[in-house]
Amino acid sequence: IFDRLTFDEQNSLKNDCVLLATSGPTKEHALDLTIEIIEKYMNAITKVCQLVTKYNKKLIIKIHPSPDELDPSFIAKQINSQIKVIKEGNISPLIQSCDLMIVIGFTSPIVDAHVLKKPVISLTALDNDWGIPTALKNESCLITNIDGLEDNLNSVLNNEHTKNELIQNGIKSSNEYLSHQSNGAAKLIGFLEELVK
Image 1: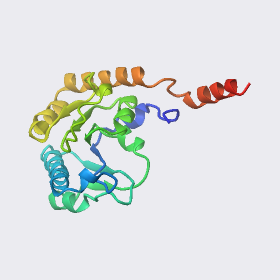
Image 2 (image 1 turned 90 degrees about the vertical axis):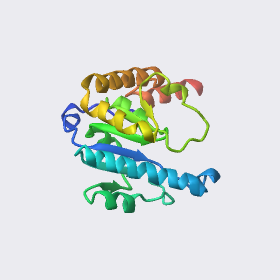
Image 3 (image 1 turned 30 degrees about the vertical axis):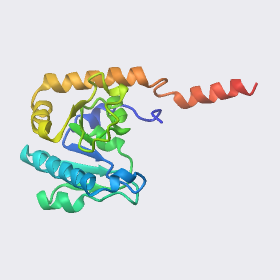
Image 4 (image 1 turned 180 degrees about the horizontal axis):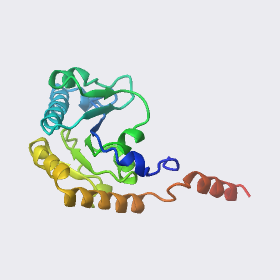
């Protein structure tokens, strides 16, 4: 999947926004249907919108393209009418042009951000008792809760050392966990051809 995902220095220099990549509570997960989980998700969206607005950064919210996703537009627009909510399309160009990506929980766009050399904050608002994934125990992603979000957001946005350390750890992580970046499809086809000989 990452064969066409490449670092584009020209677009990367834009760094004109904070991207919130989120997948809200869904019908597929019974625990997501509780009022408590839905409220936690809405509180997380609210907090991110408030803090990014406070820091005078443009915020783009990219939600998972499932038709069952909870649309956070109504929350975002109450806080700042300039917040853009995107429901469809490829997330990679959004990651490429952001200064920082925030995710709620642990999601595959974290890997995209690592490949694209972007710092990531993971907001653990929806605790499912699964713990931190092994692939993120290497400090490649700043993991925080709602109470620590403001300090961590400030640190990444205003401290180049913190930001660069996250980026470098993300690059190391993607190199460790992704094999054959940029030529995975060709390697897979070669492997399959060898199997049928």
